[in-house]
View 1 (cartoon, rainbow, N blue to C red):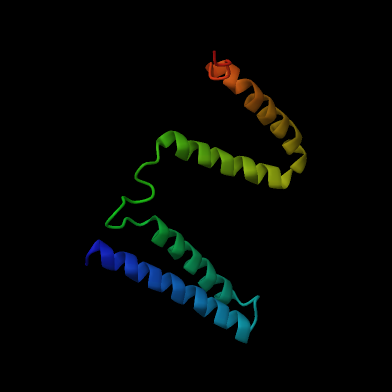
View 2: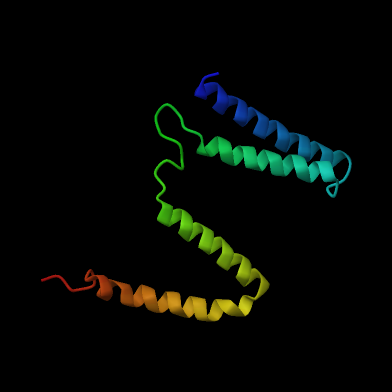
Length: 114
């Protein structure tokens, strides 16, 4: 099976799963186990469909460096930590603001042009 067909089938399955979940939720109950399962599976397949390669471009993850992947994982862990303890946001936002303000001078790009 060609990669083109894999992409098409993934998109079709994603749409069918989301529609099936919505139909189950509308006809039975939004708290139904199958409703949530179908919608989550459709969302996951939809994400895979977006990331799959096409004829004109490589896969979405082909140009990611390991540094960005690590930064994303750390960001996710940090987000989960903040959800449990929102008071952590105060020093994080303060530190980020100072770094954004100081970074141009640290890298040398903040010097005025002549």
